[in-house]
Length: 199
Image 1: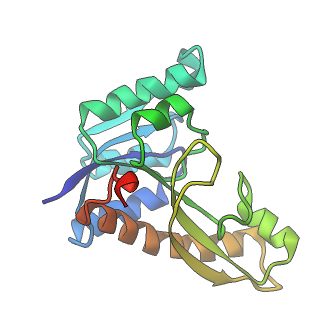
Image 2: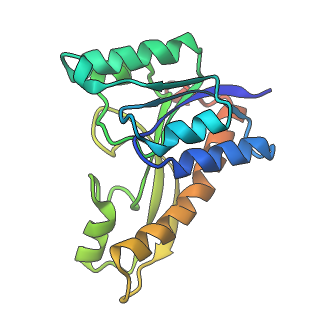
C-alpha cells in the first residue's frame, strides 16, 4: 500500500524528481499526492505536473498577511489530501510554529550538512569556509528550532581541498538523493510517522 505524501519545494526539484523516480520503480512506498511551492517558476512544479501528481499548487506568499497565514493556507491544502508525511525538498521558507503544530512529527527535511554542524541557509559555503574534511547531509524531523529536530539519517562525503561550492554541493546532493528516499520509505512502512512520542 502506498501512503500519501505532500512535498513542499522552492527550487528546481531535484529531490522531488528522485522521490518520484523511486516510487515509479517500486522502491518507495509513497504516493506524492500534493506538491506545493512558494515560487511560481519553481522547477518542482513542472516536474510534479509531468509526473501526474494529482494536486500541484503554487501559493503566493505575498497574498497572505503573515507567515502564519500563508502556512495555514498550505496546511489546509495538505490536510485535504490526508497525507501521512510532509517532505521538504529544497523548501526555502522557515515554517511557522502554527504549521509545525498542525503536523506534529510528520514533517521531514534534508539539510546539506552533518547536523548539528552548519545549520542555516548556506551549509555548503559554511563547511568550505570552516575547512572541514568531511561534510554530508542529514534527514531530520522538523521542529520549531531551525535544523534541530530528531536526526533520522546521515551520509558523509569527503571535502576536497580543490572543491568549489558547486563541487561540494553536487557531491552532497548525490547522497541526499540516496538517503531521502530510504528514510521516506522506512518511515511510511514502519508506521513511525507522527508517532515519535510513543518510542
